[in-house]
Length: 401
Image 1: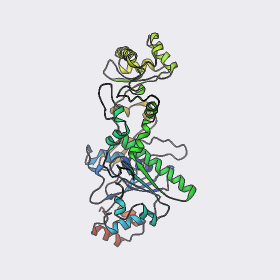
Image 2 (image 1 turned 135 degrees about the vertical axis):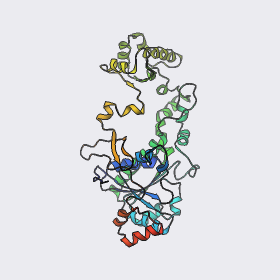
Image 3 (image 1 turned 45 degrees about the vertical axis):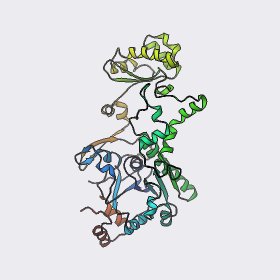
Image 4 (image 1 turned 90 degrees about the vertical axis):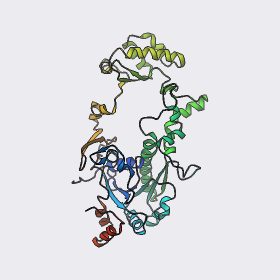
């Protein structure tokens, strides 16, 4: 399948991507969509686990396809001196290395930050871990749910009486890992632009997800109240800010914090007596919530949307995943992107959220097969045909036929 040239604001930046599963690959895909030349480097004997995670579209993992588009693939045996040597040669051509191993693992292979600096002194080396490069948990294993547990997110999530509930999206992986790694790359690139110096950036997914609790921490510092799930004002405590069921069993999101919007809503629904109860909490909020719930059950979700369309109130449908690609706003913003995958056919994924006026960013091509670009990448760093063939025969690099 022919590949179109990459454009976008990061055109000319090369990133060596040693990440796996969800956090790192999502972040590097965002960078690739913005034009960076991202080379996904996988171990020949233990490729990215996401390649084998169900569900599948034909024989390909839907999850792998979703977070690895716009990248090139190089498969190496990094546990060999020759494999590590190839990687260090690539570093000389790169701007950034992103890795997602426990502290010290890559140093043992001879490709840690200090080794990378010897190959290229101004290299930027982004290290994503669960808990950071230091501290008592530095070498502990962890996943999204664990980072959210430490951060207080699980304890703050759920309805009254449910106890902690796992949020639908992987907040630790996405906010703590993917987004923070993108911020790390862009910040370090700008610092290098000013100083000429590279650096290692230590990205802890626990650290990265803690800012999601900023308001909760502020509230606790002011009140010393540790809320149970469903009790905080913006997590169920306020009747004016919640999810309600409609006549058809679908749901609606009511998010009215401003007095002027609340007044419009109360008058629209014929309940001016609610106006003075806007921000009540506790038992008063429970009573108001029951009344609002009774109201919303009188119409279907779409009927409520029609009724609210001409009014300036924060009332929106709760869409499920099958509905979002049909939503007119999401379609207008091109946030559902369709690509033709060579194995899986046409497949839709989430589009690029940043809209640049002068350097448009968009997905360049579908996720690569393992080692799909090994030969061309090795040629780029000066490897001769006989060397590449030797790498293939010795199991140093995977070179597909």
